[in-house]
Image 1 (cartoon, rainbow over the protein chains, first blue to last red):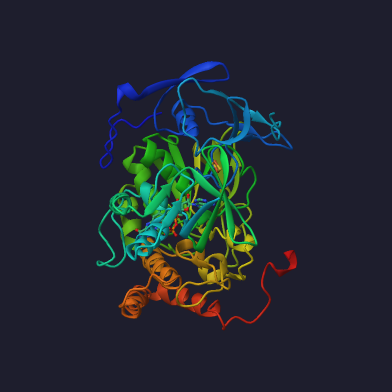
Image 2: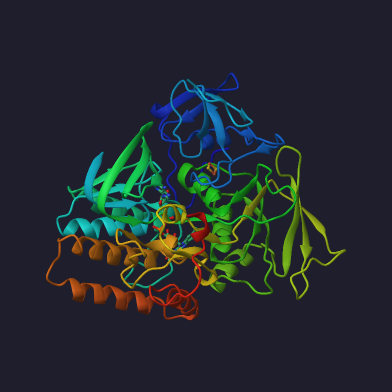
Length: 104
Length: 371
Ligand SMILES: Cc1cc2nc3c(=O)[nH]c(=O)nc-3n(C[C@H](O)[C@H](O)[C@H](O)COP(=O)(O)OP(=O)(O)OC[C@H]3O[C@@H](n4cnc5c(N)ncnc54)[C@H](O)[C@@H]3O)c2cc1C
Ligand code: FES
């Protein structure tokens, strides 16, 4: 969910900056400049990956690239820290399960 | 290989002032930051700052970040690399970074490490459920991206960060169900506590969280009262419904790079965790490496900025970019810093710093067994 009115922040969103990416095959709208994790949260998606040992659901924790709780597979590349990686038009984002496979 | 005079790692207030100070003498400076903009913790702080007037109290954190960023942009001898993460520090003083999907090497005559801190976790059942966030993450979502982290929050920790972030959540339209605090007293300033109490938020002291409830994400938490020995009182458990559990239980210096670089690091509770031994100019036990800001001890932005200036100034003077007034200037900065640390919190910090001052520390380096 996006905040519409805020007493301090100016949250006017520029429609020209709207982009679309896909998550699990579904199209999701986002704004240029947002991180992948932020855009997913805005769309109400909180589970980003399954933990490597017990496959427990994991979401954002630190949002500054410290904790690895937000690793996802982005355009085929595993272990992308989605809290510090910007979302781009046409990106394909998938939930990560386990440790992620090395890509060639 | 990229060569430079000064490499600053971390673009928070400490790193930014270090870079500015160092560049003013004419040295070539590179500042790397893993996020896509400079500012560190400041870019999400919408509240007016506490701290000394001279060091920008009363100004919002976001404005300080903007001001420093503009200053950096106006210095042509500072190269800013964002989305650049320092990954390793090698024996030959080479720092490896990942930047634009490439692995790069930087070699500098002096390195200033200003990586800040990471948030503490708390041990309780289900603490890994999505919806359990560090307070910084909540701020990032709300204040940087204008996204609601959820609808109802339980805040854990009534220090300044817990209180301020609770207020920011209210401003964004989130219901703060309760603030719980393990200590028998509120740790933060009473002005912040009164603000959220006036909004009807209960603050439960001597309380902790026993477990998070939920399947795929947080739906609530079981909270419990603590006795005088901080043990959970059986039978006092109660369930509070919420979709966010926000942890504001302290920060921990991000000293990994210092440990890799074999700087002597000591666990110092007064400073929040593992911090480097250093001299009064913020030089570590390695001749090449200076530190500044939260990585040298959890404190405040105002102190981080002064430390950055001291480290920056001293580092350039050691590689021949000295100005005539350097001693006066260093003294002025140190006096400022000392004044800043005059209150009761400052006293604890000064005690911690005394312990890890070069020459004072006797004991075993915490990571010597790794060598
Ligand atoms: C909610 C809240 C409220 C606060 N209110 C106040 C206040 O009112 N007054 C006050 O004085 N202080 C306040 N503070 C404290 C203040 O924000 C911090 O003390 C200050 O930001 C520390 O500065 P720093 O430069 O040391 O670290 P940071 O601001 O944390 O910056 C460190 C930077 O280094 C980057 N980094 C880390 N590792 C790497 C790496 N390997 N490679 C590249 N970059 C890296 C990080 O991304 C980050 O941008 C508050 C803090 C919080 C969380
Ligand atoms: S949420 Fe911690 S690394 Fe992304």
